[in-house]
Structures are given as structure tokens and as C-alpha cells.
Amino acid sequence: MLTASISVLDFAAKYRRDVLYNRYQAGRDVIAQYTDGPPYAYFIPREQRDPVAAVEMLRRLAYNGIEVHQLSAGVTHDGIAHPAGTWVIAMDQPFANFVRQLFAVQDYPDLRQYPEGPPDQPYDVSGWTLPYLMDVRVVEAASPLGDEVRGAMTGLGDGGEVGDAMVAWDAEVDDAAPFDSPPGVGFDSHPVAAAIVPPPGSDAGGGALFVDPAQNNGFKALNRAWAAGGQVRFVPGTVGEEGAAGTSGHYVVSGLSGSARSALVSSLHLRASTRGGNDGTRLAQPRIGLYRPWSASMDEGWTRWLLEAYDFDFTSLYNPDILAGDLRDRYDVIIVADMGAGQILNGFAKGSVPPRYEGGIGGRGVRELDAFVRGGGTLVTLNNASMFAIQQFHLPVRNVIADLESADYFMSGSIVEMEVDPSHPVMSGMSERAKVVVERSPVFTTEEGFEGAVLAKYPGDGSPLLSGYLLGEEHLQGYAAALDVAHGDGRVLLLGMRPQWRGQPFGNFRILFNAAVYSGGVAAVAPSNPDFWEAPEEDEAAEGTEGRSGN
Image 1: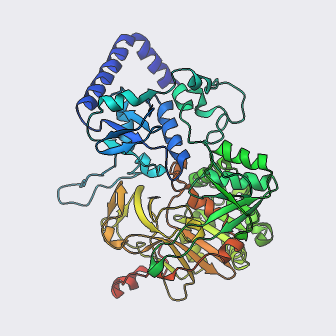
Image 2: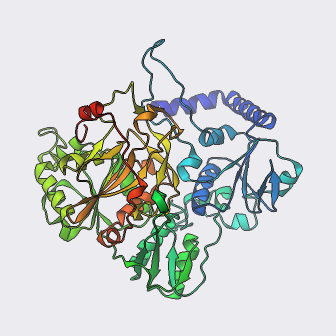
Image 3: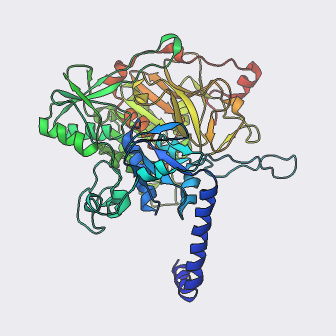
């Protein structure tokens, strides 16, 4: 690394004129490219399902050198009206290809290892379309921006009030912008990024605070309310008719002073209503444990980072903590990030590490987790950790793609569309047609004896792929993607997805957050919607070869 760094500096010093001139030519050519052809610009409305998600996206772009403007007056372009306050990224700028690469849909080509041979498939993530990941509505300009639009575009970061919003990069502040995810100075050291802020928080004043789980910051509000001695209640959604998706539930915060409630709304830019606080079921702050194996898991690290970023109070559970037993006396919810059953059960081989780090939870740990769930706890398993729960708890659920060859079915890290039932508490705040991150994810069907609910499913026909790579769409059509399985007095949440994938899909975070507070009281009031999903008919011969729970 030292050699490479010195080499770069040496090269730049010797050939600085060439480097700078080549950079100039590249920028000039990019400006010409988007002056003469689409996309000419992107419009990003301030009004979003989660307004802060759009700000998180734009602040990151601005911090990386992208020019962002804002409309000072409403305009109409390509027949679409854009109100004042809409953000605009004009593409005739030097680093526009950075935006294009992040906003474009990834359409992985049909490559073959040799002519007529098996597919040459991606080894890693194949879809990363940023507006999909963050659930931000973006409007692409298909024609050049006219004088009306250009005249209404105000540059951000040019001084005045905008300049006053900046914070020195080395300032000692706890959080310059509490509404976004980075702590400390964060993006506020950059003039353009600091000028990108969400609409002001709003509430009607007085009474309890009704929080929409579509806003990720709503969960910061819950956690801060608990920390301040407030109370939280959950009001479930309503079931749709004839199997249709229902309406979303919401959370109610009460027991705070008027100033404390106003501070939550203003600092987190919450859109909330206020009224009497007796609706719903009382939700005590859940005691959350996050399984942390000695054989380190990257996905566990991202899960831990995300829970910390949104002020969740949780404990890292190591192998000895699980083996100590009495889990139900200490925890309400235990989360297991995306990892294989072998990593959980076996861990590091004996002799490969110091003795205290050897092994996993083994059969004894499985029995303790099983007792935890049967005693009324909630076990949340993300992506392939679901297979651990299915196998070890003998759940009446099967992974229908377990035994398929990669030449017949393969889905790398991609963004897909799922049909979601937001009436279930874990999916509160999600849209009925949700954009979800999957990565080599299991696909579920239920078997005899199943009790519980299907929270999300793949469409019954067509391809669910939005961005990335998918081979063999017919193998997942109509099957379940997320389940709430009754097990004894408790629940096992099988989430065949990556809602916290590398800390990026802001539009999926609420799935993890809802799951983290899905303790007994909330589960008890979850509405039943059995008509939402029906298991697809399967070929009996194929079904018999797949095995009960897959591999």
C-alpha cells in the first residue's frame, strides 16, 4: 500500500500537466455527451415516502462533487409539473457519469462461458440502482432543459444562509445534522451537501405523536422516547379484502413533555400527527440481542452498525451468552444476520484459534434458542440464516430453490419487486409493491402444520427483477419471500432478503427495524390475512426431490 501510494504521488508530480489536462478533457466530453443526449437531468421531489431518504441520497452525491440545484418556482418539463423546492441534477456537468452509473438500471448481459455453453454469471452484486435501494422517486428528463427550468434552478452552496449551514470538518460536534445517518460533522462540512435538507418536521401540536414507520427516523424517535421515559404503543393496520394487501400500522409516542416532543419532530424532520394517546397496544422497549459469532460475519457488522445508527439499545450475543441459557428471561428479540448454519453451529475449528474462540453454539445452543422462542421470544433470521432456523427447529417450511443447479436458477445481489402485506407489523411502512434487495436468498413454501403468516411474496407471473441478474424466474413465481412462523408461544421471522445490505437500502431498513421491535405484544395484535398468499401448485416429482428444508 505504501509503495502504491508513493507511486501515485510520484506519477502525479511528474506528469501533473498531463493528468490535469486529461481530467479536463474527460469532463469536457461528459458535458458534451449530456448536452446532446439523454438523460438531460434528474428531478427529485421533496415529497417522498421518507423525505429524509432523498436527502441522504443527494448529500452523498454532493459530497462526491455533484452539482445539485433546487427549483425556486414550479416548472413543467416533459409534461410533468415539478413544484418549487424540487431538487435538480443537470447532467451537463463534469462528473455526470457518476450519477448515471448510480441511477441507471443494471441489465446484466447474457454471457456464456463458450458458444451455446452455460451462463457466465456474476460472482458478486449485480444491481445497485440507488433510487431503488433508497426508495426515492426520481424523474428523468428526456428532453433538454428549457429557459423556464434553467431560470428557476438555484445553485446550492453559494453563501448566505447556505454558507451559514456549513460546519468546519474538524469541529467538535455530536451531530451537526441529527436527521441524517452520519454522526458528528458528517456531510455538513461540504457547502452543497449542507444545503440539502428535508422539509421541516410537522405535527399538529399537543397529544401523542403518531409516527409513520415509512420514515426511518421514526424509529430513532421511538428509541429516544423510550430513553427519555416516554411510552410507545402500536396500532396495527387493517387487512385488505379478498387477499389484497392491507393498510400499514403505525406507532404512537406519548408521555413526553411538549418541548421534548417538538424537539423530536424538528430535529428528525418527522411528519407526524398528534391526537389522544390511548390507541393501540402498549409496547415496552424490547430487550434485543444480536448474535455475534467469533468467526466474524460482515453482515452482522453491518446490522450492528445500522442498529447503533438508529439508536437501538441492544446487546451483542456471543456463543457463551447463548450457552448460558435463560435467554427468555433476558431478551425479547434475538437477531441473527445473514450467515450459514455451519458458521452458527460450528464456528472456528478446534486448534485453529485460542480455545476461548473455538466452536459455535452447537446442539446445546440450538436447544437454548428453541426454548427462547417456545417461551414467547422472537427470533429474527436474515436471508440464509433462515435455513438454520428451518433445519434446527424443524419448521414446516421448505426452500424451493435449494437443490436447483446454478445453470437453471441463479440470482446474485439484485433488486427485485415483491408484493408485500403492510398490514403485518413487520412490513409496516412498506408499499404494496416494494423494491427489495436479495442476494442468493431462499424462496419459501409452507408445509403441513404451518401456522403463521406470509409477509411478502414474489409476483405470480413475469420477472420480479428490477436491477441486476436473475436466471430462472419461473422457479420463484408466486412463492413466499418472508414468513412469520409460530413456534410454541413465540415467533420465528424468516426474512429471505437483505434489508440492511451493506448499510445501503434505506428503503428496506424499516423491515429490520419493525422486526427488532416485534415482541409478544405486537405479535398478539398482528391482523390475520390468510388469503394474501396461497402456495403455488408444484410438480409432485420435483417436490419430492427437494427435501424438507434444503441445504
